[in-house]
Amino acid sequence: MQPLEDAVQIRVGTGAGCASVPSPRGEESYVAAVEQIFGVGAEAVLALYPAASYPIPRKALSAIFGDLAQHCPTRRTLRALGASQVEPVRRYLFAYDFPSGPLAPFGAGHGMDMVFFWEDFAFLQHTPSAAETELAGRMMDYLIAFAATGNPEHGGAPGWPLYDPATDPYLKLDEVIEEASGFRGPECDFWDAVDAATR
Image 1 (cartoon, rainbow, N blue to C red):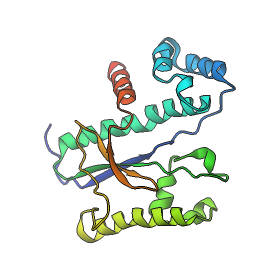
Image 2: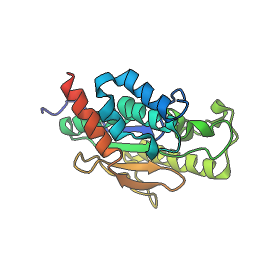
Image 3: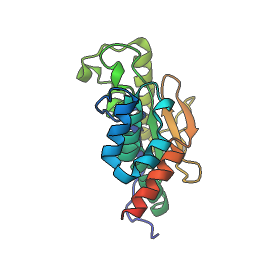
Image 4: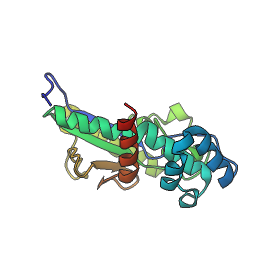
């Protein structure tokens, strides 16, 4: 692929629990919903997302749509970017779950990362805990370092790996910030195949 001209550094991320979906009333309701949505493909989807692998059926349905709509398209985008430019490409995963209160059901939901990056808890009408304030500050430090030096990595903080499609590395943003790799790999391989087959 021809490298892009005037390309810029890119950081792309998602929330680990990014999809809010209706709550099926038990496993039978979950199976029926998947069959209605995916038709002849439901058997393969249910094999990959069995209700028994999740604490409640809603989590299974959320995982399906989180992967289908966000995590796996994000991985495809990162792979395309990595093949088309020499400027750094990085991925992050926001994985912090609110432990209690009205935000707890949303988990590490879509858009929650922006609240932490910009320390804008007032937007959620939420008073942050000490741990949440610390996480927000550490996340903002990556932005400040990037603005100051062109590199989000900074002294003493966990490194933010360059994206490599062979290992799918990312920076996991949680109470403990750390490098990780391979998020939702088998699931995204499945959805990538579906995407390729339907083009």
